[in-house]
Amino acid sequence: METPRGFLALLAAAAAVMAAGCDDGTVVTRVDRRPAFSESWIVATAAGGVPTEIHGRPFPGVSPDEIANRLRMPQRFAADIRFRARAPGPRGLDPERRLVLVFNATEGPNGIRDCRRTEEAPTRPPADEGFTVTATFCTEDRMLATGHLAARRTRADDPEAFTRVMRLLLTQITARN
Image (cartoon, rainbow, N blue to C red; front, top):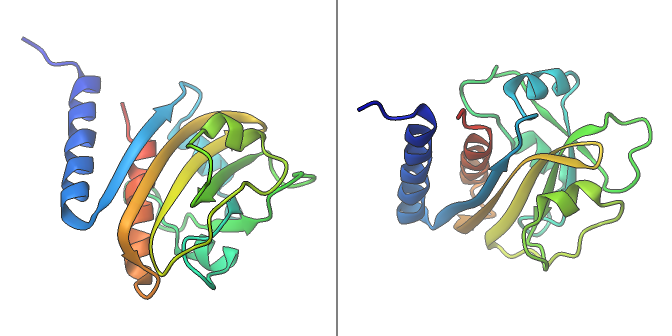
């Protein structure tokens, strides 16, 4: 009996999430990818840095530029893909392709709503330990891929851990089917 590749990918993703959840209190949920989302979308968007719209903060005192500088794509992507912080709101001349991050939202995760935002999302104040984030890849006001992360034990004084858990989230969102 042949097992479909999509099912195997789903099992692998579930195992990675469960392992991460047991390990350090990090859990990835609500991953959703539309057929229009592909690795080529990221590569095409990456010139000059992937525009990254940042709502809220994971930790007190961290700037949007620091957040963007700490993000890394999964290892199967080119190592030189970087992210560029941009303010929430009207996009103007900025490319309509972007990553939207909503840290510590007071509303439930919703990638469709996050792509349509034109103002700052309502968020809770950041703490020194633990955060939540919904990451959504958007084209104009359309959601292409999204996922939610709860990083319960990641601390503000451990920037490498922040990079690691965010990479885990981006790995789950961009996983091949």
